[in-house]
Image: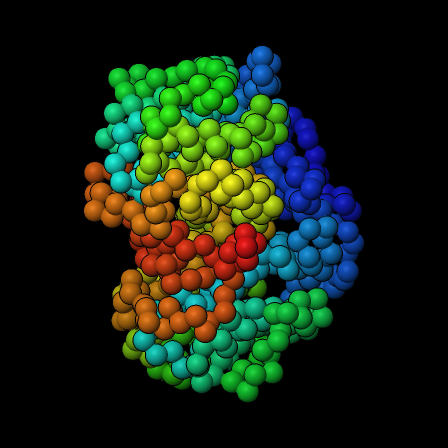
Length: 282
Length: 282
């Protein structure tokens, strides 16, 4: 596989695979205080954002990731009112969360430049940024969680980069324990948990750390994400008390929720982990 | 992206993407009367079979394709007894079909070499080849279908290569009309229908041709397939009369069926096509 100006190619040397997107041009590149952010125009996937040369999202397929990071957890929680997003700087998850009748969404991304560039190159993801219920903070999410009041949040969505670099501290028991403290009794955490077929060890470690942090139940849901390694991705929910294998079916059935990928039956299908994953996590 | 001895890279120039697998060695290559078949040992995905330089399957992830080509249709049909597989030379679908209490499975692949090489390099897929219910024929599936008796088959599974080369004639109304004739009144056809996000035009054309061939209902189901374009793949069911949005729930719930990916709830979740696909097909 080759890196040249015509292709952006991401290698996964530990997994013996690679994925490439054909590029029309590089629209922008900058080194923020935290990471190098680049924006490309692809031939077929719209705009592409990379951080430290790792694909973050494309215009064409980000809807699956953003819908699956938001709707399953929000329909699982009995009455989600106060939502926190750690990371999520492209604002796609925020937009989906605000489709629900929540009272407040606080988004904490360490790097304001991700949001500013998303406003320019992914404006369709930023249409809810000025919703009165939304607060966009640009600071360290780990520090924010340590300082947050106990029992003050219903849902925490960790929409972070991979467990290397700035996001590494978001994948361990210490962070999950803080989330557990900050969540109300029926609170739920969800975090992107990498590829179901490539990164089972990462996901298993996350699940174990969540349970050591006193979360009573974990559930890993999977969804397609063509521009991520293996084209398949997952999110892992951790419930403080609320059961995860049921959801507000009547609300999820409402046609008023406009989605491209998520729907009621799909959610039902995710409540059972496939046998090969159950084995990997056992 | 680059083709060299260390990587097998497949380009999808019409879609601006590419996918590569790291290779330890090329185990075999031959030109059959129909196509060039190659077998590689990959670093992380086990053995890899390619036909005319297009990825067919890997040891690691073929289970999703084979399970989804067999179990959904077999649980949708009220009482499947006589099954026909067109293509399927690697025998992975055959093995899954034979997990069901069927009377006969006739597999017609034009290229015997695919099966003989699968017996050597994917022996785990060929463990049912000598089942008394199985007949492996090596001839033209289009011709076989034209000559098959009317109303003689319950389920037809078209497990073919892409709609180029030998398989091109398996993707048009003439072939579907023959399938419709050969199927019994409650018969169902299923065919692999490419990537839900890259190949919507191919899938839409297939669905339209199936309906022009008098199939009363079509349903496209999707599943992950990391080594195929976009890592996401689909199969399209076409029902002669039998409804496709219901299935034998009690049988599908039986734990006696050993699968790695397919399960009852997953099947339920596939009965509704995601909104972005419904739009693409409308």
